[in-house]
Image 1 (spheres, rainbow, N blue to C red):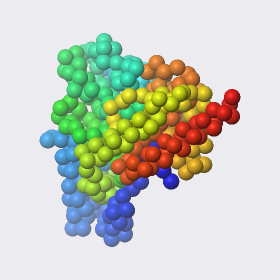
Image 2: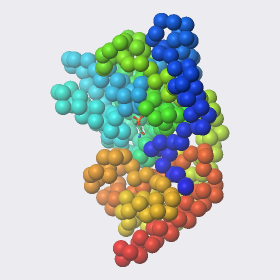
Image 3: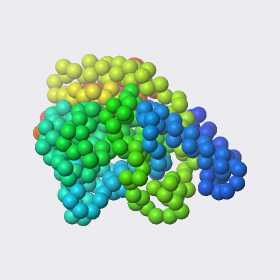
Image 4: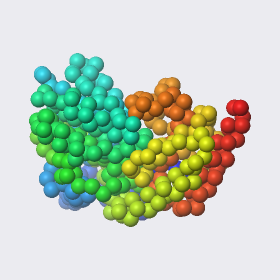
Length: 372
Ligand code: PMP
């Protein structure tokens, strides 16, 4: 199998699965119980909070464990909302776990702005500048686009925020960036930052929200008051400890350079093929392609028969004719229909990429013959 859908999810580290088992079957204690063994677990969880902060480059703030990025994004946005004059700003490129929360806010009567995307997949900075004002409560944008691999210039966004709406909170959906890109959160002063373990070889159903100033956040679920009251419910200790294992066993710089080689090699192999177009974006982990004349989903299914797995973008795009993110970048409907997403991991070899490109082009040409 050649798995090229690592933006959808990654394979969990075997060592992480061993750790998971240890904390599920031996050190299984509830961190909120009152005895020594539970205190030890609570202390270990605090160690993971510090590790996440260290990896973000955060010298202050806290980390709240959640069930994944969807929950972290909901908590960041719904937990930040305030009644009254306040306005909320998002981009049209956001993942549904942000975009649909924004739409829900709008339906509840809040003032919500959706900023468009540039042709390169980044947020339209000039439009952002025009939309924010002294009523802006929150700006929520993604770090890396899960659809295109575009990296938003967060330093520039923070600059706009500080100039036009210093009172606004900045939330970053960092799912496709954390443990993949080298960065320091203090360079762009994010107030809230979302991560998800299964995107970097951790388990599914585990994530976190970094919060610079927890007192600015309100809980969205009610219960026993775990996680400082910001997220009730017994913590997923085995999952969190397996996430820790993944963080500790990823070499961000080394992987970044290696995966960049894979993406460059892929591009070189398909470039100059008639009908094939790709998007030049900054993240080495994601490549967005169009194969003119062939439906992206058909291509994806045909490749699966050859044991090659690629993505066709977010679930919303497979249900509807269009794709909000790609449309916002100005892509035409033919490009969108013939679009697939290839996403890399350091576990792939150069030979995998060579074989995948050969199979993809062969499949494309055979499908083209059929539709002629
Ligand atoms: N945000 C982005 C940018 C994503 O790529 C994803 C996963 N596709 C999510 C949020 C949702 O993550 P989770 O599966 O952890 O809920």
